[in-house]
Image (tube, rainbow, N blue to C red; front, side, top):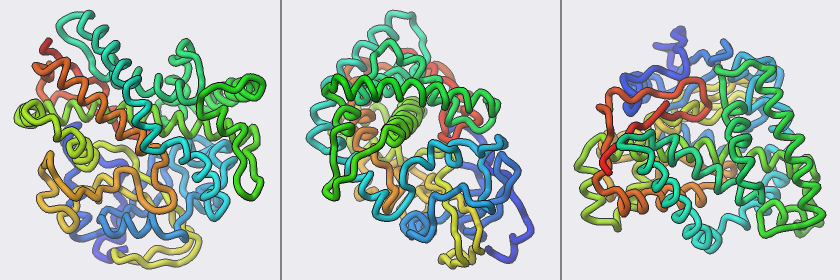
Length: 407
């Protein structure tokens, strides 16, 4: 770590001046202390990397693992289990090596461009229905609650073959498992146990009566070497898809609307040229300053990255959001450029553990933005952007609410 800052331990996550702006420390750390000491919500210390090249290197290097159950690994939360990345269910699935790649290949077959294209009409239809209800509710609404949250959980329930009537339960389980501070350890453990029990019954039912869904396909899928997923792996996969596919995308829909509406010229540019939707979604992902905790990694040997030295046993927090604001990687990094290309942001990570569901997330965000532009061209924030409040305590970043009007 940089010697000038070796004794300074910063609280992490860091406080930002407003919900849509980055913490001022990011730029200072990238310039003078690219490997910084931070204290996590658990009280444990970790190393924080903030530069684009350093974050990319750590996420791509197989020596930096996701094995956060090591005795000397930092706990992210103050629960005994350490939260999402340390819990028992997270260790059911292979965390690295060929076994992990085999699992990824079995899952990724579902997330092809062809499958995503087939899903899009249904996503747009659901978005239209949710917007109908939002508009009917009155002249002002919370876009996050009305559209951002119900849409992704509907998509995930559809992928897993889960009835719509269980959507609210899935939302609660996702919120509890991803929370660092707002739930007690007993509540988190209860949520995980309830989800495990539900999915265990669901997997058994799908074995008896397979449907046209991802879970049914995985139950019968066989890898080239004969490997098939166990029931525990299927349940853990369901949890992983729920967490990755619901909370992150739900919060991103709200943040996307807020970012684009906070400066009217952005929304007007999209209304004038709808072909910008795809590149705008990528720029929203890059520009997001409120993306949450980032990705943790554990290094089991002394290591060096361009930004400094990392001792054996260090837990490394990778701030993709800071990396995405790195002027060395992006021209005019502090500005939102709707037609930016290429846009090699790290919002979905990189390397062997990059987000499996990124094609689905992109499809949902593009579909929602297209429908909003078509249905509500006069959409605007109902409060000043400075009044938007960040959602505290989640592994992923978000806004408490996104009040909108204009229909």
